[in-house]
Length: 139
Length: 106
Image (cartoon, rainbow over all chains, first blue to last red):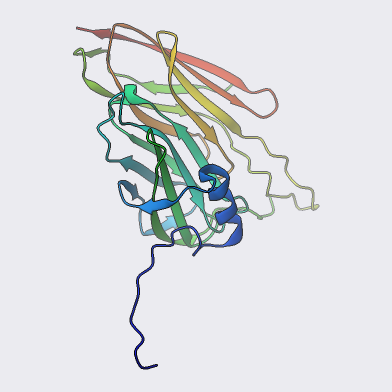
Protein backbone atom coordinates (compact mmCIF):
# COMPACT_ATOMS: atom_id res chain seq x y z
CA UNK A 1 0.00 0.00 0.00
CA UNK A 2 2.94 2.27 0.59
CA UNK A 3 3.97 4.55 -2.21
CA UNK A 4 0.67 4.36 -4.05
CA UNK A 5 0.09 7.68 -5.75
CA UNK A 6 -3.45 8.45 -6.79
CA UNK A 7 -3.44 8.84 -10.53
CA UNK A 8 -6.38 10.31 -12.39
CA UNK A 9 -6.44 8.70 -15.81
CA UNK A 10 -8.68 10.09 -18.50
CA UNK A 11 -10.35 6.98 -19.81
CA UNK A 12 -13.82 8.08 -20.87
CA UNK A 13 -14.19 5.19 -23.27
CA UNK A 14 -12.41 2.25 -21.68
CA UNK A 15 -14.06 2.76 -18.33
CA UNK A 16 -17.51 1.97 -19.69
CA UNK A 17 -19.15 -1.37 -20.54
CA UNK A 18 -18.32 -3.25 -23.71
CA UNK A 19 -21.38 -2.39 -25.78
CA UNK A 20 -20.98 1.31 -25.12
CA UNK A 21 -17.26 1.12 -25.85
CA UNK A 22 -17.96 -0.70 -29.13
CA UNK A 23 -20.52 1.90 -30.21
CA UNK A 24 -18.06 4.68 -29.44
CA UNK A 25 -15.28 2.87 -31.36
CA UNK A 26 -17.66 2.59 -34.29
CA UNK A 27 -17.74 6.37 -34.49
CA UNK A 28 -14.23 7.40 -33.45
CA UNK A 29 -12.23 4.48 -34.85
CA UNK A 30 -8.75 4.42 -33.37
CA UNK A 31 -8.71 8.15 -32.62
CA UNK A 32 -7.96 9.41 -29.13
CA UNK A 33 -11.00 10.84 -27.36
CA UNK A 34 -10.18 13.69 -25.02
CA UNK A 35 -12.42 15.18 -22.36
CA UNK A 36 -13.39 18.82 -22.69
CA UNK A 37 -14.82 21.32 -25.19
CA UNK A 38 -18.18 19.56 -25.07
CA UNK A 39 -20.87 20.10 -22.46
CA UNK A 40 -23.67 17.66 -21.68
CA UNK A 41 -26.61 19.22 -19.86
CA UNK A 42 -28.93 16.59 -18.45
CA UNK A 43 -30.69 16.48 -15.07
CA UNK A 44 -28.69 14.42 -12.53
CA UNK A 45 -31.94 13.05 -11.08
CA UNK A 46 -34.99 12.34 -13.21
CA UNK A 47 -38.34 10.95 -12.14
CA UNK A 48 -39.47 9.72 -15.52
CA UNK A 49 -36.98 7.97 -17.78
CA UNK A 50 -39.42 8.08 -20.69
CA UNK A 51 -38.59 11.66 -21.50
CA UNK A 52 -35.38 13.22 -20.26
CA UNK A 53 -34.41 16.63 -21.63
CA UNK A 54 -30.83 16.87 -22.82
CA UNK A 55 -28.74 19.64 -24.35
CA UNK A 56 -25.29 19.14 -25.84
CA UNK A 57 -23.12 22.12 -26.69
CA UNK A 58 -19.57 22.35 -27.97
CA UNK A 59 -17.33 25.39 -27.63
CA UNK A 60 -16.29 26.08 -31.20
CA UNK A 61 -16.00 29.27 -33.29
CA UNK A 62 -18.01 27.48 -36.04
CA UNK A 63 -16.01 29.10 -38.84
CA UNK A 64 -15.29 27.36 -42.17
CA UNK A 65 -11.83 26.44 -40.81
CA UNK A 66 -12.81 25.33 -37.34
CA UNK A 67 -16.21 23.80 -36.71
CA UNK A 68 -18.04 20.84 -35.23
CA UNK A 69 -18.82 18.14 -37.79
CA UNK A 70 -20.97 15.94 -35.61
CA UNK A 71 -22.21 15.17 -32.12
CA UNK A 72 -22.84 11.60 -31.02
CA UNK A 73 -24.73 10.60 -27.87
CA UNK A 74 -24.48 7.19 -26.21
CA UNK A 75 -25.86 5.49 -23.13
CA UNK A 76 -24.66 2.66 -20.97
CA UNK A 77 -27.66 0.55 -19.98
CA UNK A 78 -30.47 0.93 -22.52
CA UNK A 79 -30.91 -2.13 -24.78
CA UNK A 80 -28.94 -0.24 -27.46
CA UNK A 81 -25.92 1.98 -26.79
CA UNK A 82 -26.79 4.63 -29.41
CA UNK A 83 -29.04 7.58 -28.61
CA UNK A 84 -28.54 9.92 -31.55
CA UNK A 85 -26.09 11.26 -34.12
CA UNK A 86 -26.29 14.93 -35.12
CA UNK A 87 -24.48 16.31 -38.16
CA UNK A 88 -23.76 20.02 -38.22
CA UNK A 89 -21.50 22.31 -40.18
CA UNK A 90 -20.03 25.80 -40.07
CA UNK A 91 -23.42 27.21 -41.10
CA UNK A 92 -24.86 26.21 -37.74
CA UNK A 93 -23.25 29.25 -36.10
CA UNK A 94 -23.58 27.60 -32.73
CA UNK A 95 -22.77 23.96 -32.01
CA UNK A 96 -25.67 23.09 -29.78
CA UNK A 97 -28.54 20.61 -29.98
CA UNK A 98 -31.38 19.72 -27.64
CA UNK A 99 -33.62 16.69 -27.58
CA UNK A 100 -35.50 14.37 -25.21
CA UNK A 101 -34.24 10.88 -24.58
CA UNK A 102 -35.25 7.63 -22.86
CA UNK A 103 -33.27 6.08 -20.06
CA UNK A 104 -34.09 2.51 -19.06
CA UNK A 105 -32.09 2.71 -15.84
CA UNK A 106 -29.81 4.93 -13.81
CA UNK A 107 -26.72 5.17 -15.96
CA UNK A 108 -24.01 7.12 -17.68
CA UNK A 109 -24.70 9.21 -20.76
CA UNK A 110 -21.77 10.03 -23.02
CA UNK A 111 -21.59 12.77 -25.65
CA UNK A 112 -18.78 12.92 -28.20
CA UNK A 113 -18.04 15.74 -30.65
CA UNK A 114 -16.10 15.32 -33.87
CA UNK A 115 -14.37 18.53 -34.89
CA UNK A 116 -13.33 19.63 -38.37
CA UNK A 117 -9.67 18.91 -37.52
CA UNK A 118 -10.55 15.27 -36.88
CA UNK A 119 -10.23 15.44 -33.09
CA UNK A 120 -12.81 13.90 -30.76
CA UNK A 121 -13.95 15.36 -27.43
CA UNK A 122 -16.22 13.80 -24.86
CA UNK A 123 -18.32 14.58 -21.81
CA UNK A 124 -20.01 12.15 -19.46
CA UNK A 125 -22.95 12.59 -17.10
CA UNK A 126 -24.42 10.26 -14.50
CA UNK A 127 -28.20 10.22 -14.34
CA UNK A 128 -30.28 8.64 -11.60
CA UNK A 129 -33.69 7.50 -12.87
CA UNK A 130 -36.48 6.73 -10.39
CA UNK A 131 -39.07 5.55 -12.94
CA UNK A 132 -37.33 3.75 -15.78
CA UNK A 133 -38.40 3.96 -19.41
CA UNK A 134 -40.53 0.92 -20.15
CA UNK A 135 -38.21 -1.20 -22.24
CA UNK A 136 -39.62 -4.57 -21.28
CA UNK A 137 -43.02 -3.78 -19.88
CA UNK A 138 -46.06 -5.78 -20.87
CA UNK A 139 -48.64 -3.72 -22.71
CA UNK B 1 -51.94 11.33 -39.06
CA UNK B 2 -48.61 12.49 -37.95
CA UNK B 3 -48.06 16.17 -37.59
CA UNK B 4 -45.15 18.48 -37.09
CA UNK B 5 -44.61 21.53 -34.95
CA UNK B 6 -41.95 23.90 -36.24
CA UNK B 7 -40.64 27.01 -34.60
CA UNK B 8 -38.50 29.26 -36.81
CA UNK B 9 -38.23 33.03 -36.39
CA UNK B 10 -40.25 34.77 -39.10
CA UNK B 11 -37.65 37.52 -39.43
CA UNK B 12 -33.94 37.71 -38.73
CA UNK B 13 -31.03 40.02 -39.38
CA UNK B 14 -28.47 38.80 -41.90
CA UNK B 15 -25.79 36.84 -40.06
CA UNK B 16 -27.89 36.34 -36.96
CA UNK B 17 -27.72 32.90 -35.30
CA UNK B 18 -31.26 31.59 -35.02
CA UNK B 19 -32.67 28.61 -33.15
CA UNK B 20 -34.91 26.12 -34.93
CA UNK B 21 -37.20 23.90 -32.85
CA UNK B 22 -38.99 20.89 -34.29
CA UNK B 23 -41.37 18.29 -32.94
CA UNK B 24 -42.90 15.41 -34.86
CA UNK B 25 -45.70 13.38 -33.31
CA UNK B 26 -44.67 9.74 -33.41
CA UNK B 27 -44.95 6.78 -31.02
CA UNK B 28 -41.24 5.84 -31.29
CA UNK B 29 -42.03 2.20 -30.42
CA UNK B 30 -38.70 0.78 -29.28
CA UNK B 31 -39.13 -2.82 -30.38
CA UNK B 32 -38.19 -3.95 -26.87
CA UNK B 33 -41.69 -4.10 -25.40
CA UNK B 34 -43.97 -7.11 -25.58
CA UNK B 35 -47.67 -7.84 -25.24
CA UNK B 36 -49.27 -9.92 -22.47
CA UNK B 37 -49.12 -12.93 -24.79
CA UNK B 38 -45.37 -12.54 -25.08
CA UNK B 39 -45.18 -11.18 -28.59
CA UNK B 40 -42.66 -8.44 -29.21
CA UNK B 41 -44.20 -5.16 -30.30
CA UNK B 42 -42.33 -4.47 -33.55
CA UNK B 43 -40.04 -1.49 -33.71
CA UNK B 44 -41.60 1.61 -35.23
CA UNK B 45 -39.36 4.64 -34.94
CA UNK B 46 -38.22 7.67 -36.89
CA UNK B 47 -34.67 6.92 -37.99
CA UNK B 48 -33.67 10.09 -39.77
CA UNK B 49 -34.34 13.82 -39.64
CA UNK B 50 -32.95 16.49 -41.94
CA UNK B 51 -33.29 20.21 -42.53
CA UNK B 52 -32.50 22.03 -45.77
CA UNK B 53 -32.17 25.81 -46.05
CA UNK B 54 -32.99 26.95 -49.61
CA UNK B 55 -32.10 23.49 -50.85
CA UNK B 56 -28.83 23.00 -48.96
CA UNK B 57 -28.74 20.53 -46.10
CA UNK B 58 -27.74 22.34 -42.90
CA UNK B 59 -28.59 19.72 -40.28
CA UNK B 60 -29.19 16.00 -40.12
CA UNK B 61 -29.79 13.52 -37.30
CA UNK B 62 -29.92 9.74 -36.90
CA UNK B 63 -32.49 8.67 -34.32
CA UNK B 64 -32.50 5.47 -32.25
CA UNK B 65 -35.08 3.84 -29.93
CA UNK B 66 -33.55 5.84 -27.05
CA UNK B 67 -35.17 9.01 -28.41
CA UNK B 68 -38.37 9.81 -26.53
CA UNK B 69 -41.79 9.63 -28.22
CA UNK B 70 -42.70 12.65 -30.33
CA UNK B 71 -39.08 13.47 -31.21
CA UNK B 72 -38.15 17.01 -30.27
CA UNK B 73 -34.98 18.42 -31.81
CA UNK B 74 -33.58 21.91 -31.64
CA UNK B 75 -30.52 23.26 -33.41
CA UNK B 76 -29.06 26.50 -34.70
CA UNK B 77 -28.23 28.06 -38.04
CA UNK B 78 -26.99 31.38 -39.38
CA UNK B 79 -29.68 33.38 -41.17
CA UNK B 80 -27.97 33.99 -44.51
CA UNK B 81 -30.83 34.84 -46.86
CA UNK B 82 -34.59 34.95 -47.09
CA UNK B 83 -36.18 31.71 -48.13
CA UNK B 84 -37.44 28.39 -46.96
CA UNK B 85 -36.53 25.65 -44.53
CA UNK B 86 -37.58 22.14 -45.55
CA UNK B 87 -37.78 19.49 -42.87
CA UNK B 88 -38.01 15.75 -43.47
CA UNK B 89 -38.57 12.83 -41.13
CA UNK B 90 -38.04 9.25 -42.33
CA UNK B 91 -38.79 6.12 -40.33
CA UNK B 92 -39.83 2.48 -40.11
CA UNK B 93 -42.81 1.10 -42.04
CA UNK B 94 -42.31 3.63 -44.83
CA UNK B 95 -42.86 6.64 -42.59
CA UNK B 96 -42.09 9.96 -44.28
CA UNK B 97 -43.29 13.40 -43.29
CA UNK B 98 -42.26 16.83 -44.44
CA UNK B 99 -42.80 20.36 -43.22
CA UNK B 100 -41.51 23.75 -44.19
CA UNK B 101 -41.12 27.26 -42.79
CA UNK B 102 -40.25 30.60 -44.32
CA UNK B 103 -37.90 33.27 -43.09
CA UNK B 104 -37.33 36.86 -44.11
CA UNK B 105 -33.72 37.99 -43.69
CA UNK B 106 -33.10 41.72 -43.65
